[in-house]
Image (cartoon, rainbow, N blue to C red):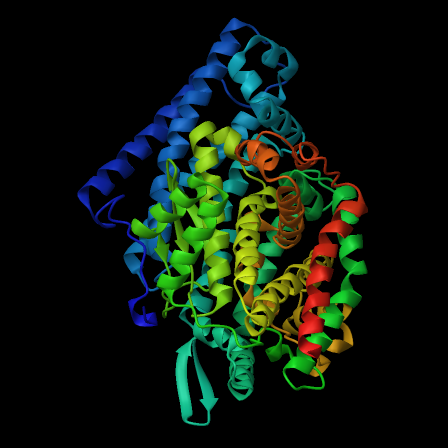
Length: 599
């Protein structure tokens, strides 16, 4: 299958089109449902109160509310994801953009109701509620988290104003960044002349086997980011300023504390993981040195970090599909069935193209059904990415079939659990079936991702933490953003990547920085990778016992914190020893990689 015939996802099974009458009618019904839910809130005074005595009437209202709220959220998610599928694949689709803007207006109403619900729960004795209601008992984790969240609410008027202003504040800045970056057309100077291509294609050149082309893509990319630096810096200042201000107003010590609360982990866990990661930097630098040697270089440049190494095979999309289905089937029929369904029902949008968002992600659309955005290229790395996103889809299935919307609030840390596990399944099989040259290629692809999820994530964590600290005092300039980014790269990549070629605009590249609800969307990736590797080690040691608890773990990621879930597999995430053990798996890969490079 050529790039031009790579599949687009099929949204017609949900609605025929954005301007379809059925879709329009369902949107109107959703709007009415939100209005009805608001009326229910008003009638039962679900709002800010001092104290609420838990009696039979309160219990009845709570149980009705759970059902009504869940129904609205399900509808909202389906329609929002449907619109998002057009926005993310074609940023020039004005109809989709207008639908999204309209949809966000009604999303504000749900946000306000959510705030009122948090305040209402915060005013009652939730232990008494849980003791008297089976529904409350099933939602006990959410209730306890909500009770704590209530202590960080501003006044009702301030919360309402913050929700409304977000559309013209953080959300607008995010939209600007997304429009700019997805529509960028970049002139790349090659030996055959100037070729104009979308930024996503330019960034894909970083993994091209031709070093001259990698360098040309890197230089063109930096030149393009420089042209947009004023707009992207303004967007980042706007987003980080809003997030930092609201965190302070809500009584959080910092946006990081908010992120840790939302991630279902504590500072002790984060510190244990980050300390273990920092201790691994010398090992990753061994990898960088070995890769440079394998490429015939004295030292890697930034544009060499993603370069392929070894005689890795070319993977067509069809070959990737068949291999993933086969390997998922080796684990379980359920996982295999999910993959077959995703491919056969066209859940996946795989073709890179102008106006389409770069990278890859998976989003739930309805019931147990998901959609996956990817930008496929014929390499093992893209095979691994597909396996990763299908892991998210499998996780969605486990949550959809067993949990309500309140029980499916999946923290970023645990959202990567199934995806990393599926990556490991595919890599394990690929290495077994590969000759020496291809093993080198597969290990390189894996270690390349590991270096991104440990060293690069640490640099991005340093960047975001520093930016928040400085942004609390004033706006930052373009040069300051660049300087902080380079400082983070120096701390993590060190001298084994040519410092003169570091990427000063990585803050413009990563869309997560521009999402008000995704602050510190960096360390959860590392957590997910290392936690997933730890789980995979448990699976390899005792497959049948692992399988008996794994699906339940996935179904429970919204009803328990990370430490509690980890204990099910005798894992202590507050101990540096666990994270060191997971990193030891990567160290073993580095050792094997060095041996292969050295012959």
